[in-house]
Length: 249
Image 1 (tube, one colour):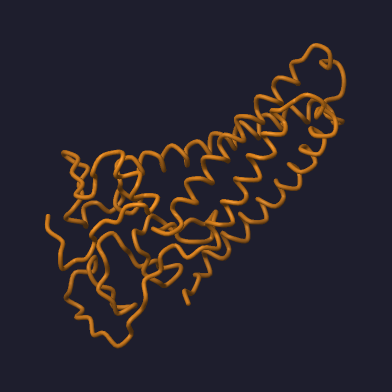
Image 2 (image 1 turned 45 degrees about the vertical axis):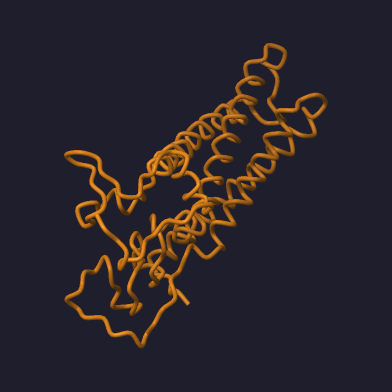
């Protein structure tokens, strides 16, 4: 089993408790929205459903195997061999694009990054769920911001309390939602960018270590096969050859 690093565990405790705290606040707001404005507002219902999907894919990303490679502790790895092809800890010949995660202490296939928000690696097997989480979270926040701003500026309730709370508190809620939206949008757009061109966060940051990808002075990516095939590869509908023995630049 992979061993989670203590530093990652501390991050996880902070982020998870923050997530649950916001969920409790959100539950009250959703409760207020549903029971006060449910009459003919399909946007409120869709906001609730979108947030449910976002939370569902969040926990799928957190609990699923990201693509841990099977260890072979009997295999002898020479220290002089390239570290991007071999792993002396897991005792394996790594597929291209995999990497050893220092937090999980395991090699992960098509390693993207270790996410403290998720408390799990983002790899080949759970990347699609991570993308869907960022997608539904972003759309849900757009929907929620629209609902809150629309009702906050409604002249009929301009002088009244808003959803049973002081209006100034609701104004701060809108600011928090906008802030969360920008964070979520950054994750979603950056993940979409990597999906379209079929590269990972690790490959972008450490491109100088890998022979098959380069971002400067010109872009070169051995695994970029066009948007359509890249999307199929990301969602694991299309396999790619990553065995070092068959790998050629």
